[in-house]
Image (cartoon, rainbow, N blue to C red; front, side, top):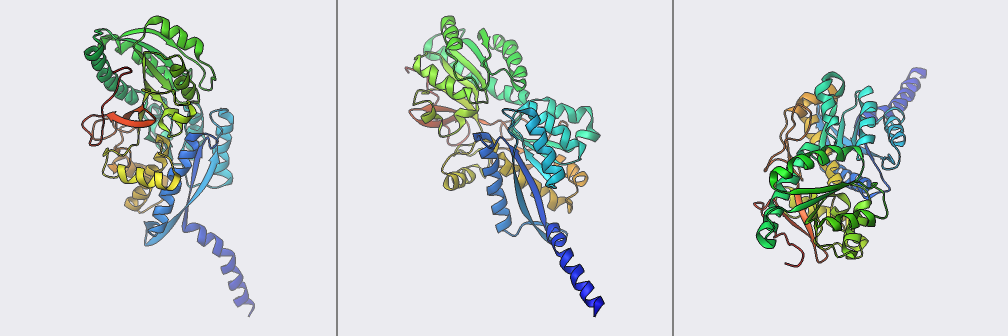
Length: 406
């Protein structure tokens, strides 16, 4: 009798552990008070719900359900907050995998914590090339890092310069200016450094004149001094490299000044639907790199964007690539027949994953491979309150780019 009771008690005590083994816990780390973190979480929720509804992740004859852990890193404001959040997610909350990250300085610090713990870290926000360079420099330590989105800084540069070249050609043709003048407006943070240097080196080779570099804070609330100085140069283009809330200020104040220059580059705030309202409708013709629109970048792009809009009543920003991160993780676990990070790494390295924003393949730095038909991102322009995709022109669904006054 006592033996029977003891076995029953043991079974009851073991039940939570058994249930835990049927669940995969994924920590979603991002600045949850900002649009970037909101989209980290939204993309992850969609992936979780779709996978769990379909039965979960198949491994060794079992079906594993996904459990998400929402982790606010506060990384836009504080790098230490971000590292502490990563530490808690791994050591206290026992996350199996970690995804997300946004600010490069914070993501680099979080990368160290994840690597200390040999946790697979799928990045969905930070562009600094050092994150991937770490993998090449010390593979044994950093192999658990993969960047899902965005492209690294050099890859973003390749896309930006391709689009800038097309816009410059349009300026030459329509405005009869053979040497367009470009002002560089980049927030003063780590991830922009390589892009600023590349622009200074490459734009003159593309027959564009760089008239200066201005670098406000990513959280600046006033850039009138910078814009006034840019106006005085007679710039035809303002090349923006902005990921923080300053992107809204730039859009609004350029409109208020009725600047003739056309803004294009990276402006993360301009990727979201609320940008037009946030700029009080002043941001007409402003353009930015983006990831998602109802265009056929991959076979799944249009369906994902429509489903995201239906559920969240807004368009996704690139940080919603957590959806692809979880989908890729599912496929890797099923191919490896294991949830062990050391067994997943070589599987992911060889994968070609058809995501919603790109067709992902990874190079030696565990960065997405750049290329039309693989991963380039798209370019969009705000036209009379609508965000209009215009590049790459050969993709079905793209529309014409407009110059002010044309």
